[in-house]
Length: 346
Image (cartoon, rainbow, N blue to C red; front, side, top):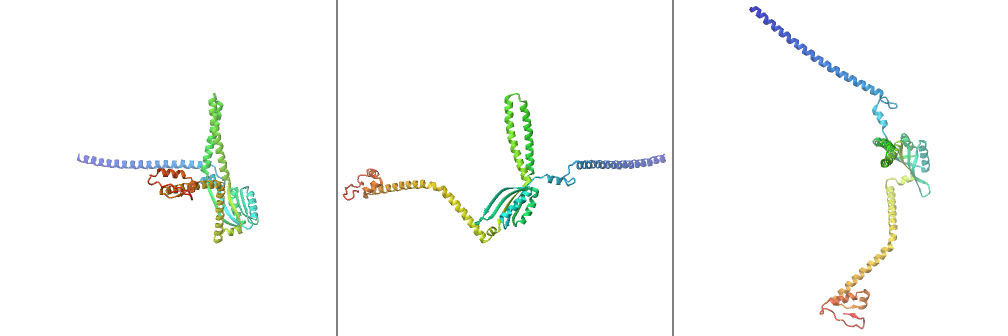
């Protein structure tokens, strides 16, 4: 019996050990299966993304001369307004102007504005041109300026107006849809009130639409045609305009002339007012002197100083003096005596 009990105890221990090992193996297998499942899921998702990405590349429009490069395609869609300015010192301004105009017209551009100045001998000494050339030809035109003479103060500026252009396009499209809708409403209007309201709204929409279309066309023209402000100056004039004492002297002289012009303009404005101001000044001066003299005569009358009657009459203060005498006390009032020589009041 004891041997049988010992055998059963040993067998139970072995069985429990096998169960623990089996449980451990099952746990390991479950963990391995979960990891493989996650990896397969991730691989499936990655495969789907790769397929979608490749499909997007296959169906995406390609920019000319480039292969599936989205940033470059966006760069080509940008709208940029380019402007430039330059000063060129030339030997013959008239000849340089002719050459530049021919070059611009050869590029398909035109002269938008032109201003010329001559020296004392009647020779063209300065020409300022505002040129419009296709944007793609501006760089070549700037390079050609070196063949005219010495290029000074060359500058170039580019402004990205893509956002403005897109906004105008969206607003124009929305207004076009609104106009079409209003036309349909007018066709379906059953009363004159509805028709009148639709016509009023349609007129406002069309006016706004025309304004936006005009702005968009102007912006497109600036993008397509670059602007170059070119100043062609004779070498002798450029030497005078150079820095240093001579240049400062020339600037000072020009400033003096501008100041003189301003003074002459002010004088021309004031000349018609001179007679009026003179008459007004004379009248005011006479009134001031008269009032001052009256005050003096009153003071003398109070003091009892003899004043010639002729002077009193000339100043027009006789009545004032009499009134002053009446206001004075009897003991302070001066005596009146007839003066055969001058007739004075004491």
